[in-house]
Length: 487
Image 1 (cartoon, rainbow, N blue to C red):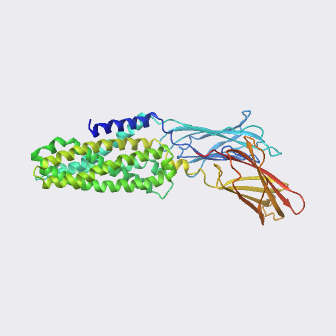
Image 2 (image 1 turned 60 degrees about the horizontal axis):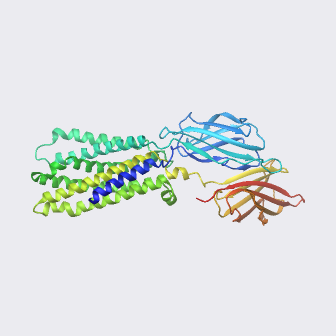
Image 3 (image 1 turned 180 degrees about the vertical axis):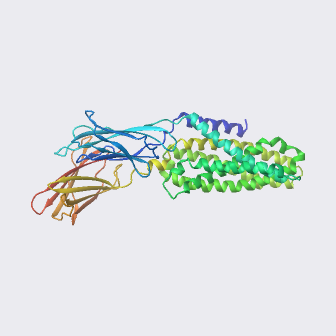
């Protein structure tokens, strides 16, 4: 069995595995929320919001907020953020307890339905929470092999129309007789195919990225336009391979293959340039590339492109010159056509992976709001507003800087009468004995802080802050911070 016959079944097996494994769900997935999932708040919030990974169709979002008894606290209507990626709703007056937020939405990018829920707790007057906060839930429609197949067929159809139009143009320009009779239809095919590429790019993930207008669309159009020229041209060569192999067609084959090779070099530049920009927009980080299903499919595309580029370079710099120099140019043409058939198979596999990527959530969309911003909680004690912040946003075990700011609740002015402060960390769920108290750095006016590795295990951490006041009364405030297991 030849290497070519071995590799093609392997590619088919790879694609079958990608379909069967259910790599991801529909696009509008949970990214973040306010309050954060699992948060324990000193007081009940007045509204809740959910940020998703895709723009939401206006009018499709719903939110429901209930306590342990099923009593609803949401006050319609649902409102949308200016970028269309966040839902929010006002809340009625609530007390201590566990609250669950359930939401549904439809992605404006692909029309997929998605839903999920998260919970948060509100402390009682003693700083405790009665009950356990449930975990986060987010579900969406699984990737449909039929959807991926239809998208891939659409990509292949555009590629064939574009590539064959270009090949036909090469042949028409190589004829000795006047090509005017067919030139306008060929050029119209090329123009319409390019327009279809641009139109298709307007509805992709890249078009939804919140960057300078047009960058994502231009990068996607360049990337797919390059693929279309390259793979479509290869398909055109395969379609007329019997004609090109004939000895009397050798002069024409030499011209057509030479022109295609030069065009393919520009197509590769478009593919690589557009691909780099798309990777920055849709993958974003090395973790997104190596640690997500979306990133692995991108790596699979790169792995298929590498042999395509190698075969193209071999054809251009080794075999095409032989069509001029060799005594029997048809031998070199036959070898080129054979390589092109294999290259076309790889190109079709690339288009299937491209179709799969359009049905998956980009790695950068999921990571965009996680771990970003500042985790902040507020509580009022003895007429003072105690503002607690964590930086970076608490996610996994690591080093964190905690800041406490004191202000009069009545007018918001700074409270500068604190002179010593301590902080104590206790793993509350699962329970563990309290850690030794640590001194806060300060005061710096109304500002105390500490940088620590105290959050050393996953779970829900109870943080007790104690500030000594010059009037002899200690100020005590309790906050809760959830920490997830790494990975």
